[in-house]
Image 1 (cartoon, one colour):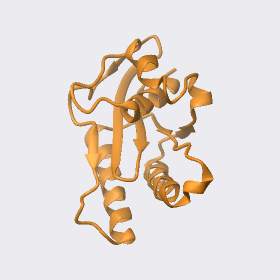
Image 2: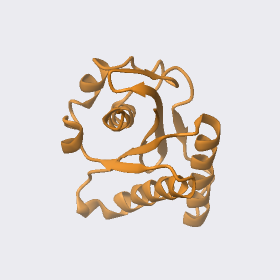
Image 3: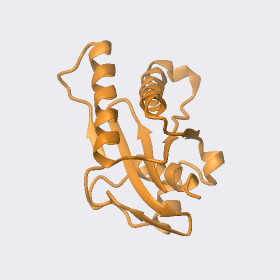
Length: 151
């Protein structure tokens, strides 16, 4: 089984590729590309959304084919709608790319993953190696979502 785990933020796409089964898997891009920063030159929403779509298509082409797309969704409170809206759009774009490619998908929250935001790094570090660069809770979120969907 091959899973693409994703955690979007307003300025970054964090992702992991896991291959194998729940009891025996590899984090294949652990020491490779795992962070994509939104270009600062993009100002218009339509340009940003198109760029995000192109990046997800590139990930599916470069690392696929995938058996599943697992998204760790943003859990910000509704009062931060402007931030939440952008991340929700990015999640929707990733989902639509998966749909077009006939890849099953899911969206996870911490309650589904069995951890909390302040504990996710430690939760993942006992299950798989950390990335050699850019290790943070968003990367751990992507890995946790992917692990949840391994069978």
